[in-house]
Image (cartoon, rainbow, N blue to C red; front, top):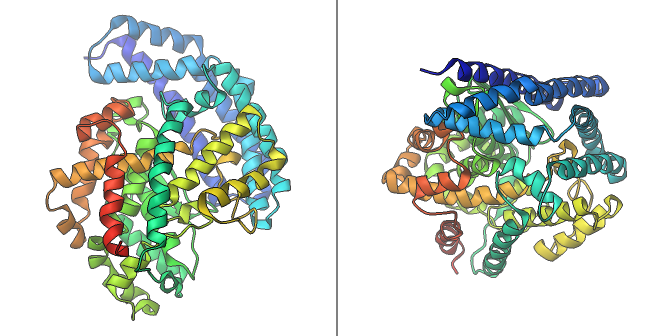
Length: 498
């Protein structure tokens, strides 16, 4: 039976969570339905609610409630988790003045609107002043939070608790060491796909219906979620009963929306799979952004780009989109697994994708510590892109303006995408061991067994375990590159014949 002190503590925790949920809905609306001229008012609304949530968190009464339950030292894992994680959040938050939190909320609300416009009109100079201000504020956050080696550590810790830039750099160096020769081998392989067959006409309305069907088959509950359109696809979850997905449609490139929906639905399944009994508390929240990304990348790539998946869904796709009627299953599967350096991260193949992350990780660190000036971002981006991917972006819109993250002030987020790929491969290998008939299930369109395994082994744990602990628990080994490269090699050598 929970103590009265713990019940009072949890009441306050849920109040903070409710304020954050209101903030999330306002941000979702800004990206989907808010008219462009509402930006200034929305910035004021977000600044107010962010300030209120922050004040609730750093309030002396909350600090006292937290200290009271710590003194009780209840060994219940739920209590331990909620107290530990709220202590972590409290200790970070008390270092940040409320006026700084409000200014960040106001600034990013305006920056997001400016980014949408700058990206559409291909003018980085229009976004640059907003990025300058975002960086100034995030440097202030890093200084107040504190760090041992570099400011990036303080910001990355928000998304991947305990991660450090120097350690991530070592992991990324190893990724680069193995990826570059693999990309070269695929490029020189005797067999090559025909990605042009993916560019056949596909009406947006039909894409939306097909994408919803796949997401529902994955187990996404549309009675507790929805799918809309935004400039940059995302998932926003305020509770397991309210999860919003977005995508974007290109009527001459169906994979963009379909794999975008599967990706975001992977995030959505995680949100819907959290234990509703613990909603609004750390036990009802996701572990880290890297673990979250593992769910989306798993569904998008390890499931969505697999032959078993398309053995079931390709005839259905052809029935919905007559332009693909003459395409064989083999040619389609090969085409959706085209490995070719490309400009847009969210549309990159799974082999070259991590190179996009390496670029952003490096530039973010340089921006934060002042080695790179905002005005020089387009040139630095293009130079790094050429070095890593062999391409030079033709416009800022397909270069340094393509991602929304900097306008949102979430610096330190990008590394979690690459970590997510590694986690995904390990988790999927563990799922295959636990479910020997998994490929057969997928080939029948039976996607729920995988969802249930993920829900039981990952989602329902909430934040009981840190990311490295969860990986060890679920897979029996620490985070490793082995599963990821085993997966890539096993998949792409037969496809490309090298």
